[in-house]
Length: 260
Image (cartoon, rainbow, N blue to C red; front, side, top):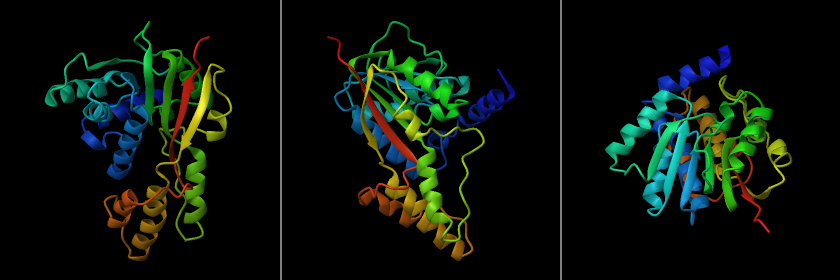
């Protein structure tokens, strides 16, 4: 394991016990991600959570989809321990949420086939677009024919759109975190296995990011304050339709071609 991977693993091990904030301090974004993933998982029974973190999303999926069963993995042993603790606290049976340590480049649960596989800001922890596409290809082999691959990740195009509003407003550019490699939408939607079909790009977070990273940030700066994630302006986005632009986090949905 190289130094970058060691530092990244240590970072996530330290955040494992932070509950809802383990994956991000932005609770509004986490709420939107869970709702969006659940929407795209409707009708799916056997599900794989690839890079599950501490299991918050998996638990919420199981609550919203009572007939579903989830296999989950994460490369952080501390995150896996937190999933097991949370599963016990929530009274989720082991056969509804199975979890193990695993790598996105060598996914566990061999000889399994799933109705749906989802990632939630886990592919961004790989080192390069090439590794990300390799992981997508390996995950897709675990889909049943007609199964869905749901990629909920941060994208460079969305971040660039946010900055295109921030800079004219006198706000500093936002840079991606040191431990992340944001995906390229152009890359993901053009270079994918030929046994997958691109179904949709869902810009579900667009309104939230525009209000939180541009409007709320501008007001806070003018008031000499740090912007707050739980600002009423941010919360307003939950009641508004998507504006389309500024969606740093997008969900890309593929399906696996049916066998003839």
